[in-house]
Length: 502
Image (cartoon, rainbow, N blue to C red; front, side):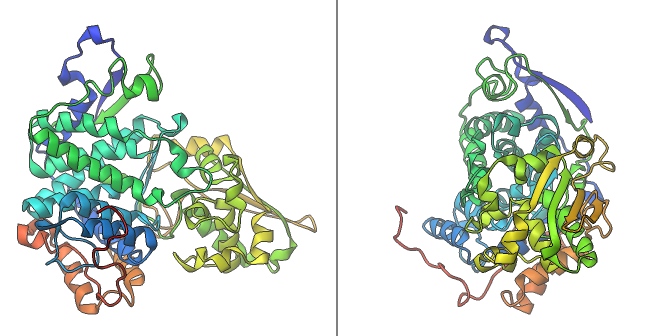
């Protein structure tokens, strides 16, 4: 990896485009590096993972509404929608929109945490949609996804958005743009212009993840993917974009991030270096914010030593800065303790999540968030006894530069009414690459089977899994079949309607 220094320059400096970060990101797409075998297998895993969580969410209102928007934009040469037959095709930007919402809705797919946050598999829906519309091979899809992951992870490692209250799709949009550029084998100049447009339009506030969290949380990455497709399309037609978008006098760094004196170091692959950073990312075993994963596993372990939850006086979770302030009591959001809160809010409340995991000893993407579950009086009593505390040691481990040393869990003290204290800790989730039971292909397939049980037919399940396993050799026609169909009788909102403008 090569480190690139990124800072703000006055307009009179006329920074050459070859020295601009957007150009260097574009070069990740145009450099024909060899493919790493482990990275290729992980791409296949993540396509399976996306399909699993998307199918499980198909009839949830935000997903169904996004689908009806896409249904208003049919295109016989377009892309497929999760749940619908592959014979039904739609304009790729709208397919990416609907599929992106489906993938994100349950907060149940992959993650990368460093200086900022990311769900890198959000790059896959727009890349796959464009591949289906433009007739690309499986190998092209692989190169696109690996390029997107490489850029996404590099940006998340180097540039913190959340401390400036910017939403993390500001890194997703350029990553997806680079991925589409790699998929289509576009010139560096075209991708460079598209990246700048994508960055320009994707800087948004973090209110989308604050207070009463709305359904926009699922739509946000879909918006970034749709913007990436439109940015590439416009650049392919010869149009230019605000430049330099990162280093300019009035750029995103100068006015939305660390300011005119900012200095960032972004590490990108050397020419010819395989794109392997997808291997530093990790999926979820439980449907909740990633920082809750290890703490859910820890709750399962600790509950075995508790005979009566009513005897608990207080639960204190010592954890990282990010966990404390994003999903913990450090957020200051009263909604995180509210039994009437939205599902989107509850999956970002470690106080709720830990209480339910402690009581139930299991976690389910629907039952654990059901309104009647959140309102249960004994749960509310326990939930409101839980608080978080930032521990500098856990913050340091969260940001450790060595992936093998990173930790996203915490230490929990459960204090009982009689003065007894139960203490335990867990650094990473069981499913993490460094965890007790790291996810492998069998686990991804098991997750797919659990989430699609009773929805996808056995024949369709076998067809999809056999097809995606052959991703490197897929023809354009086979890429167009890379989707999961469900029985139309099960699917809601399966036809175009007139409730909106489209």
